[in-house]
Image 1 (tube, rainbow, N blue to C red):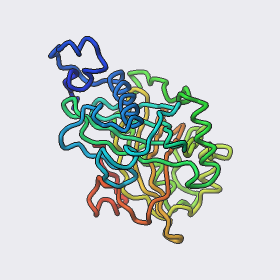
Image 2 (cartoon, helix red, strand yellow; image 1 turned 90 degrees about the vertical axis):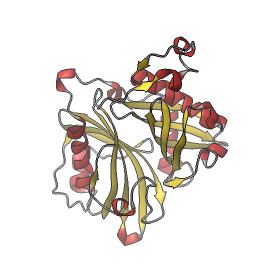
Image 3 (cartoon, helix red, strand yellow; image 1 turned 30 degrees about the horizontal axis):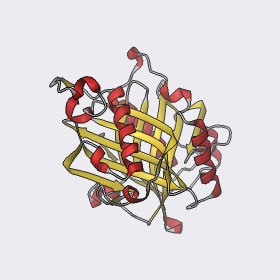
Length: 301
């Protein structure tokens, strides 16, 4: 069902024609969502959420912790980074954002979900990787993104209208990735294109291609993938955005991820993730305890 929003309430500061008070209701489509993503980053860097059209009961979580709009990065962010990739899901009223940010001189890579209702932001969910908090190659990935500034061209390629798959079809194809890597034995179903590549916190992590990596090196690495939430589907560009947790039970280790999939002709061509180490078994802040511990696929919001 197409979510429609009051553009004056959402973008009065950003759209001159609407700032004059036009009462026309219009859907918040891609350009609207890209504008809002920029306003969000600017507000975060300014440490002032009052610049945003927040609903009275709006929620904000950062790396699984509910903080409100006056804590966490709202106290430490200092400059909008150079890299920005926005993916839009007007049908659900949600947008996704992969971006970089400066935090008092330290680089951040962020995966963010923003939800709108009636022109107001009701939910913001953010997962971030801070440089210096993990392997050195993750820090190098931040510099790669800063130099790129814009996403790789294939992410913005539009799928011809007659070839666009439904939201549920796209989410199911992306879900095969999680099914393949969980307790992987090298013999699973791997719906990857021949040129599929994976990028983690901005850094390429494939050897040859995704399928070869799954068949040969990524065996038995992840014991459980839980709280699988498919939160935004950009049908126009064949993009699926999901959040999940990768548990490594043998070492008591959890990765919290925001994961992005580019799907072409029913196969996954690119995978990009923002992730960080989280306390083992931590929930997302958006699921019940039962769903947070479950490996079941959660419906697209």
